Amino acid sequence: MKLYYFPGACSLAPHMALREAGLNVELEKVDLASKKTETGVDFTTINPKGSVPCLRLDNGEYLTECAVLLQWIADQKPSSGLAPAAGTPERYRLMETLNFIATELHKGFGPLFNPALPDAARKIALENLQGRLGYINQQLAGKQFLMGSGFTVADCYLATVLGWAGFMKIDLSPWPNLGAYLGRVMARPAVQATMKAEGLG
Ligand SMILES: N[C@@H](CCC(=O)N[C@@H](CS)C(=O)NCC(=O)O)C(=O)O
Image 1 (cartoon, rainbow, N blue to C red):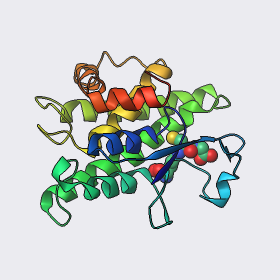
Image 2 (image 1 turned 180 degrees about the vertical axis):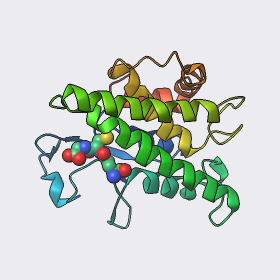
Image 3 (image 1 turned 180 degrees about the horizontal axis):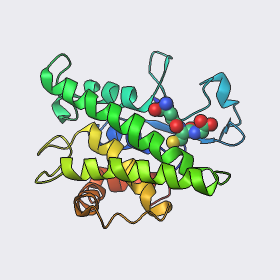
């Protein structure tokens, strides 16, 4: 298996999940601007969408889309508890949450990374994102992890995107559950090892 990634990008989430599951993975960094991988391959020949994460499976197929990769990884190691079994009501709750993180949070942060975004558009994007952060803050009330007491792939994804708040200088203090939660996730040994492997720890 090989994970195409960029340090600290959304590919950090499947990278965390792979390490939480104890699966062996080779890493290949992608320069997202030039679309060249660190071994000099044109990344668009691997993933025509040009985006990370992309996972090369052992059968030679490539799988993309964060929320899908996370579930695929969890399903390789059901005993890890990283996702409830497919077809169960709990799995649909996880899928509901992953889809929210992907479409509302991950893509909510997206425009803010664009230095060309006009101030008025930035203000609207930030307000939208803050509303979503408020919702997640409520969801975390009284819980250790997003889906309850057990750590799942939803936490890999949420911690990855919440980590961008620091980079974007977005103050998380209005939502105290978020900071406490992020600290809990980042303290996990597999998460620490992931950060170190991406040169972030
Ligand atoms: N729909 C994809 C989006 C992935 C995505 O936005 N990746 C970003 C990094 S966080 C990226 O590679 N951006 C560079 C590009 O798309 O050119 C997913 O959910 O995995």
